[in-house]
Image (cartoon, rainbow, N blue to C red; front, side, top):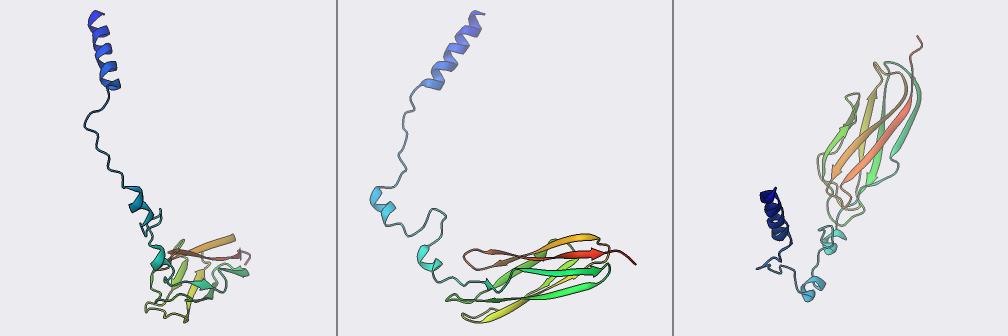
Length: 154
């Protein structure tokens, strides 16, 4: 019991002893003021020049279709930014939703389309599917929605 008390006392002293040789790695206030980066790490000067992906609509409602039918929709967008827009990828929320997107850069003030095809084979009832797009825009993830109802009546 005496050893346990001594060990406990030593552990308590070690935990509460002031730390020596602590280095102050913080930046002087003058360097913080002139730092061109925001808290998120983005350079605010170049952020204003980034391309945009401004969609006419991000939701397409296809209504009611019969199970096994395929529907497609073209989502239109425009690059209202000052630099070319590059789409690095697009993925459907499942294998039944397939996006087709431009692989070439979209120039400033130019428009483009993303075709989304939904295959209702094996689906029934209310359906909401998404397509996630990655691009070099300030908000680099864009989501498109396609929804409707699949009727299984023969």
